[in-house]
Amino acid sequence: MSPRPIIIDTDPGQDDAIGILLALASPEELNVLGIVTVAGNVPLELTSKNARMLCELANKPETKVFAGCSRPLIRPLVTAEHVHGKTGLDGVNLPLPKFSLQKEHGVDWTIETLMNAKDDSVTICCFAPLTNIALAITKKPEILPKINKIVLMGGGFFEGGNITPTAEFNFFVDPHAAKIVLSCGRPIVMLPLDVTHKALMQRKWLYNLRDLGTPIGDAAYGMLSYYERFDKEKYGSNGGPLHDPTVIAYLIQPDLFEGRHVNVEVEINSEFTIGMSVVDWWNVTDRTPNAIFINQINADGFFQLILERLSRL
Image 1 (cartoon, rainbow, N blue to C red):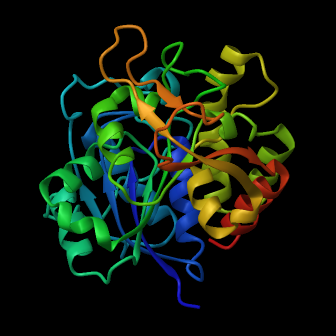
Image 2 (cartoon, rainbow, N blue to C red; image 1 turned 180 degrees about the vertical axis):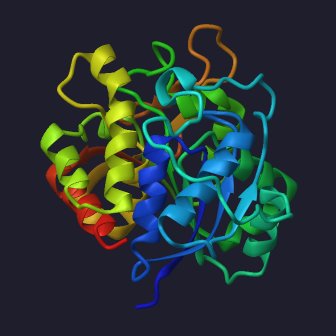
Image 3 (cartoon, helix red, strand yellow; image 1 turned 45 degrees about the vertical axis):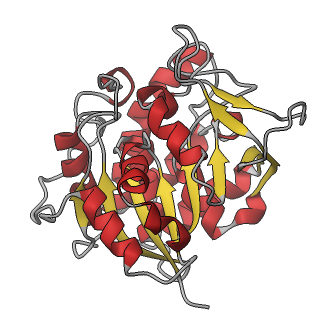
């Protein structure tokens, strides 16, 4: 079976970094057509630099990286340096990238790539605010039949929010984009806080990364040791959640996950709940299901998969 063609849309971010590395370490399952960056965890200039540094760290400098949108569709940009540090990849000191960004805007490249693809063939993997893919859909709705599915990390319901009491960060940064994507009519798989908060990094696993004795292992250990400090303090847990790699893990090993096909809407107006994902988990409305909302994970299998794949790089 040939590898699944994917586009990664991301705002690296330490957890984005592990998702990117996991994808690049899995060429048998995934064909990374390109990486498109967006403003989110840190501004666009940094996310674009970080994505290229990660490709070079993985010894995959041939990977095409495109800069996408520098701000949300409507709202001012909100970033998360308080979580990820001023670079987005604090905890490791990677060399500056030697290869350049592609000249084409990431949204235009996404549209062009999808228009040249077969119907139902490309999977969009979103680790970030959904600005780029929402803009692509709005500019060129003809791309929709080309999309096999959109697998995204975002939202939350029973877990509430992690940037406001009701909103997960990616949906809060660009709720209007999230609303466009969730109403696009293509199959959507949603990895929300309800599942990522069940995937907590443990110190022994982090030591196993370090003990790989490779640049990848050292970098992952440094990044994640820095990154988890914020959530451990906030939640009082023994380990921080690892959000974005769940998107790639779902594509590689979907049997690690369980969920339910439900309707998900995004609040875009309320002062108190903007960015909230409203999930009809109990089917109490007549709204049509539009997403598979994942809420269970085999955490041991998830972390084992990451460790095994990163050891390949």
